[in-house]
Image (cartoon, rainbow, N blue to C red; front, side, top):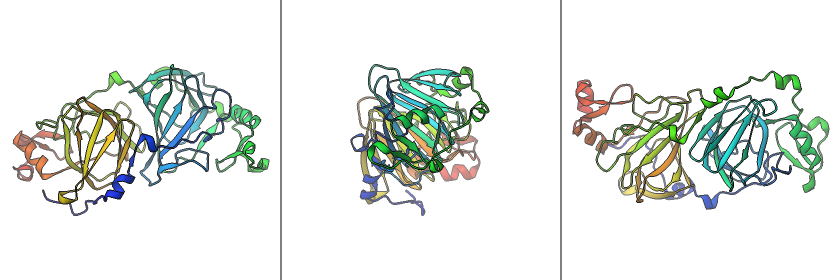
Length: 387
């Protein structure tokens, strides 16, 4: 294999740091101003990559390193609600467990959509949204947010009023003050100003049909068996299904259902039992969240190789410019989400071994970054991929 000069060598300590296991995720129970309101008092907020939009100075952040996006978790028992608020940057819900009702609009009455495990929904910026766990058991949602600096959130004026009755106030810098916890009440001049009715009515309205195009159901995902250069190689067989943005898929017929800029791309991946994604490198940072099964990731090259196992509900953050391969060591298909930084089309750098194996099967990567018949590509490409 020809090493890439700019490849990052990941140390064992760094590899351990970038693995966030479910058991190590730390919840904050008073992360937002509505967390003491009846019906919202049992919410748990996790900041996994970046602080996200937490309003608590005590929030534990698993990985604070900038990724170009943030990732968190909303965990709520059955019947608990997250109240109406606005985001400045993208907010994407990837449902791991439970049945959830999302509502939106000035008073949460413009529409509703119910989503379940495996569904992904992207709520537009600058509209009020709220959600409730309408299932019978505890629910868990991974939440992706655009940008390293999300700007915080705007709460519906009614939520600010009710929160004050429980001793919670929000300052102009979007931080929570809990007077029931001994903190002094800020001066009114230090508090965030509630939105006026005129400001609320000026926000864009979305119909149920509009929002239906921003929800990708589990059963509607379009997986490609030729999404990667190595997909046809015996013992590999990984498939990808785009969800939003331009990701790493190398199938030219793949079109993401949600295409407006989010600051990241999101793709579902699955690997059959015993299958793998061969050694490759990405220039961008990428996060893998395992939804079912377990995968073994191997990083670096040669004697420096490191191996980690990532289980369901765990995540791993791959540094930019690093070699990795991914293998399903279980007896069932492993499913995961890949979040890759940036709105651009990402291009994989494949190892020499993978390029040569693909060439033997008659395939290579064209100048546009997609899998194509090697016989139809220019001679220069044929020489590059030649076994």
